[in-house]
Image 1 (cartoon, rainbow, N blue to C red):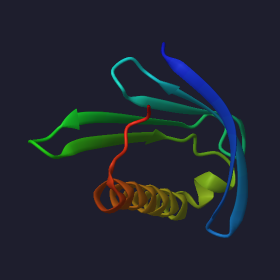
Image 2: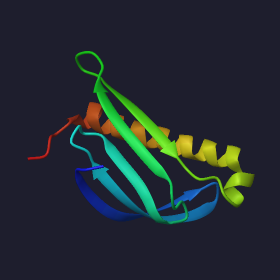
Image 3: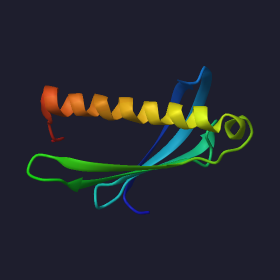
Image 4: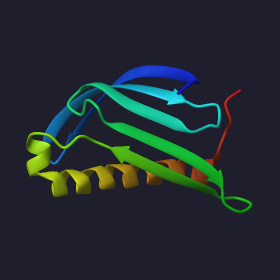
Length: 108
């Protein structure tokens, strides 16, 4: 994988169920992000985000999310998939608002 990594915990509620995960997020040399859930409710899941220029002032963001469907997640797979999509869409909208309305400020 390579790159700079951080480890953190994240708590969320999806379809009425509290979830606590420990995540290792790695920024790769090309700027993409790889987040692996190493412990918790969604252990074994992975989210990869890649970024590519799309014209002068746009960036194409590609998200790939893989989650093992076991136990209750297997039974409620359509509901979990919808909840994950909503969470990702909401997060992207928050990022878009931050970039387009508040303005992007690169780290010093």
